[in-house]
Structures are given as C-alpha cells and as structure tokens.
Amino acid sequence: MFELRIFFGALFVYLSNIMALKQTQHLKLLQKLSPQQIQLMKLLQLPTVALEQRIKEELELNPALEEDNNESENEDVENEYDEVDGSESEEANDFEEKEIDKIDDGYELEDYMDAGDLDAYKYEISNRSADDEVFQSVVVEGPDFHSQLEEQLGLRDLTEKQFAIGLYLIGCIDEDGYIRRDLDLIVDDLAFSQNTNTSKEELEEVLKTIQEFDPAGVGARTLQECLLIQLERKPVKARETHLAIEVVRTMMDEFSKKHYDKIIRKLNIEDDDLKDIIAEITHLNPRPGNSEGDNKGQMSEVVPDFNISVNDGVAELSINQRNLPDLKISNDYIEMLKEYSRAKEKSIKEAGSFVKGKIESAQWFIEALQQRHQTMLVSMHAIMEYQQEYFASGDESKLKPMILKDIADKVGLDISTVSRVANSKYVQTPYGTFLLKTFFSESLSTDGGEEVSTREVKKILQECISSEDKKKPLTDDALCEILKEKKYNIARRTVAKYREQLDIPVARMRKEI
Image 1: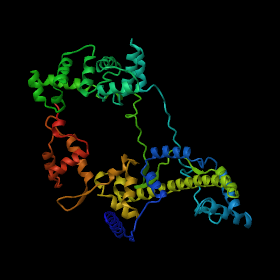
Image 2: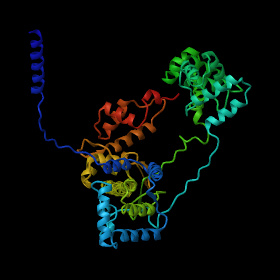
Image 3: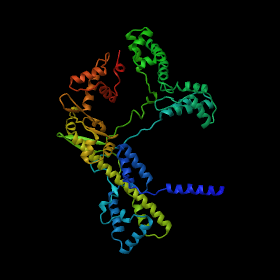
Image 4: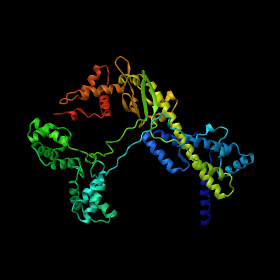
C-alpha cells in the first residue's frame, strides 16, 4: 500500500510537470547587423593612421587580399573573370554551378565572378588619384628610455642579485618615469616570476641607485619624491633652492592648492621670496620619463582625415588618403578557385571552400573601405555646407549650432554613423587643424532671441581668462556677469561647465604672485 502511494505521488508530479510545459509561438521583429555592416562600422570610426595599420593587418591575415601596384594586371584580372564565367562552354558552366553548390551552401560562383556585370563586383579599390601626393614618413630609431636606464645600470658596481632587481625595477617604470606599484607587490612578483627572494629594504636600496640616473627624478614613486630628487641633485643650492626643498617636503599640499598665504606665514618670508620658490619648483620636470627628445607622447603627429581649402571664397573638400594602398583580390586565388570548382574529390572541395571564404572576406573588406570612403565624404560635405560661412571666412562667430541629428537628417544616415565619422577625426583648414567633433555644439539663445553656438561663448570665456589680472583672476561669478553684459544669459554652473570643458582651472588655481 505504501509503495502504491509513492507510485501515484510520483505520477502526479510527473503529470503536473508535463502540464506546466507549454509550447507557444511568439512573433518578434529583430534587427541584427550583418558581418559586413559590423566591419563597416569598425572601419568608419578609425582615423587615417589607424586605418593604415588595419589594412596592413588585413593584408597579413588574408592571403587573398593584396596590394594593387600594376594597372595592366587589373586588365588581365578582368579578362580572367570573363574567361572563367563568360567564355567557357555551357557544359563547363553547368558543371561549375553544380560543384560550387556542393562546396558552399547558398553561394554561386557568380557571387564572385559575374561576367554579365563586372562593375557591380568590387574586386579592387583605388584610394588615390593620379594627382594625389604620396607622403613617406622618415623614422629615426635610437635607444629607448628603458634601454638608456639599463645602460646606466650596467655601469654601476652591483651584485648579480642587485642587477636582476634593478632590471625588474626599470621594467616597472612607466612612460612618465614613475614606479607606481607598491614595493611589497614587486617583492612578491620577483619571488614568483623570477624565483628571487628579496625584501622591501633591498628593493629600496637598489631603487635609490636608479634614482641617481638621468634624467633626474626617474624612479620616483610620487610627484613629491620626483621634485625632491631634482632639487637635491642641484650642484649649487641657492637660498630659494633650500626654501623650495622645505616647501616640497613639508608643504606640498598647500603648494599644490596654491595656498600661498599659509606658506608665507609658516616660512616667515616675503612675497618676492615666494616668487623665487614658485619659479624654482615650476621649472622642474614632473614627468622625467617624457624628457627625452625621442618621446613619442610629445612627438605624436596629428594626421588630418579631411582637407578643406578655400578658393575665391568657396570651400573645397578632399579626403586625405595618405599612404593607403590600392587593394585587389589575388589573381592566384582566382585561379585556384577556378581549378577547385571543377574538382570532384572531397579534400579538394574543402580546399575550395577555404579559398572561397578568403575571397569573400577580401571582397567584404574592399567593399567596406569603399563604403567608408563614401560615407565620410558625404558626411563631411554636409558639415562643410552647414558651416559654409565659417569655412569661407574663418570667423568663429559665424559657427552655427549643430548637433549630430542635423547632419544625420541632411545625409539620410543614422546618428550613430555620423558620430563614428566625427569621432577622432581631424580636418585641416586654412585656419588650423581641428578635431571634427569640436564643430558640433548646442544652441544658446541671447537676450535678443538670436541663437548662437556654445563654441562662441567658450571663445569669449577664453579671451576673458587670457586677459585677466593673474593676481586677481576672474571667478565663475565674475565671468557670468561679463557674459550677461554681452547679452548671454548663462547661469554660473553653466560657465563652470564650459570652463572645465576648456580645461581651464578654477580662479584660485590660476592665481599668480
């Protein structure tokens, strides 16, 4: 009887679970990006320099893609396409179609070789015209920052263990010249990765040796330590140098916040002494790692993606193609595909599928580059037309309020697409080279009801701050009053926001003695 109850109980649970399971149909409308669209979006957001590197990577990864260096070869390729898909016998064509169907579901040879309309198939791309200039970058290589430190380490009288610790510490120095990792963590790293048992005291001893290297201040752990190293290494220490050392060692917080009154009271000095101290400290290098002439951070080149020239008051646009190579599909891969399409062996069919995949990938990449070029050209042309008065004269007061939606509506593209075009792209004009997104700004109404660009207001702020009395810099409230006098009714918090966007510190931090 007990077993029967267990049976019916289990049966009841089983039937309940079955009743709980229901099959339902739902109709959903989803929008997904194809691989080609994703590739286009990724290429679209790349600036010219990054695009060069991306093309090089694709040429290395895909053997079916190659640079096009000979126009006569292009004609031969077109003829090969005609021969493959146009002048073959009907039997051969029927056989090819059947075999390609077997190699790759859903794809025909005509997807790659359409003799009826070769222009519709973009098997090559030309990024330059005959009149375009080709710029070659000259790169001079020398010993890098870390190599120079290692050379100086080798000149010191160190034990084998100290030398190994020194090399590891040099490897921990960042591009600014600092060791930002805690020494206790470095002790653990040496034990696990280098099998070197050491202590924090040993590290500090070797680190003091590194801090004697050039450039002065290298190997510091904080800005305070970096400045102290440079001050103490001065061969001749004047009175202001001793005072500067005292300020950095004991009053760094007051100095960084420009609480000069507190420094004057604590040191019992005059204003002229404080000026000498400030000059002594501000002439030090807070980033010794970037003090070398070969510093990449300071030597970075801005390559404009667009070029706008003005002739007789009319702005003309061109895209900087720089050293972008012309691309095409490899003729060798076309021949291989033609041979594999006739084969019946399974292994050869698999090889044919691989070749077809590479050709397809090359085709997508070439078409994505073409679409990128067209999208950038259309979007930038719309921006140039929208800001025609500015580009014709260079007067920033002529800039109109412009948001991404304005350009998106004008060219019929999505806002995200226009955003990718504007992001990280530079435009070279007769008035300077500017980040493209700086031309986008919200509108602001004056007291007279006129709409102006927020960039015009920022320019007024910059002019006011650059001409202010540095002993009594203008506060945000004062700047707000000046703008109101100029008929710009802006709140103080908005002034503070614009000032921060211009990377201008508060009045107290702009104060000079």
